[in-house]
Length: 396
Image (cartoon, one colour):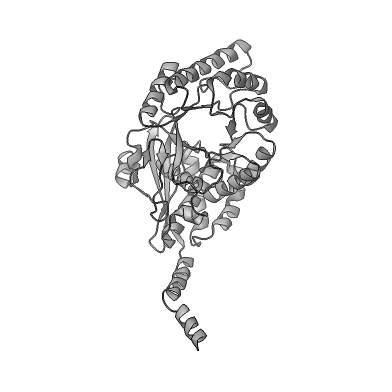
């Protein structure tokens, strides 16, 4: 009798109502798509999709810096058509359903596919009333350290120009700064004198920033794959006196042996992988020991679940993970929700100084203090789009 009463009480409220909630959630489906396009600067704009559901819950993501916003917009619409009427739980199905289109469409398609996956996780978190990081195993980091990428905002691109922007970032509390001082170097240079000229110029910019940072703050250098193996090995040696936090993408990702050779010889840690898509793309990269720190981009790699899988692959190989992301504040928060759950997380990218209204594009405003991002305990991603700001800076 006692057992019977106990079972009766178990199936009563609140457990019965919880079961009802699960059933209710399972019938939440995708009904519509909005896209907000925001003007930033000559290096790229921000594209923010928002998925709607039949439950009145919406979710946002980041589809910025795809390489061609118009093409990416077309992929967003096509992938939305796939999702329309589907459950918010169909993320693995969606991953498989978009795989062929992403393989064919490259980065423009990958960014679109990733962005809608962000939206699905935002919706799921809101539906269950929990932050997205709880859906990824719970956070192991209370705050997310970020480095200020000053590359997208520095003008003029000279030692003095980079130094001034570094000073600005340091004044805002950032203790790690990244620049890509070889971007003016034409690709495919063969004349040795020209190669050495651009190498010297880039090193001079890095030296100027190191002077600003002093010995205790961290300096990160992104080479954007401008060198070949031979000159990359030389560049790594020349950077040794600057005590780099990392040296990023000295050569292209393929052939992977070039990066592996540089990684084996370099005295500083190496990093890379921003343009690689999915676990399948990262597996040979990690297996070849191309870098010490893998950098999947939340907008390119396939989304939040794919980032978690790639990070697990890296963890098994004893590598750290630092998500790449010259992203909008939406993309920054998306990446941070996964990063907060990663035992092997290292540091997250923050695009510094692009526009003065950056923090206000989301509500509540982007919460970065002393270079650290603290995620809230609000449901979903914990943010919404500030439509007033998005409209003010919209691309007509």
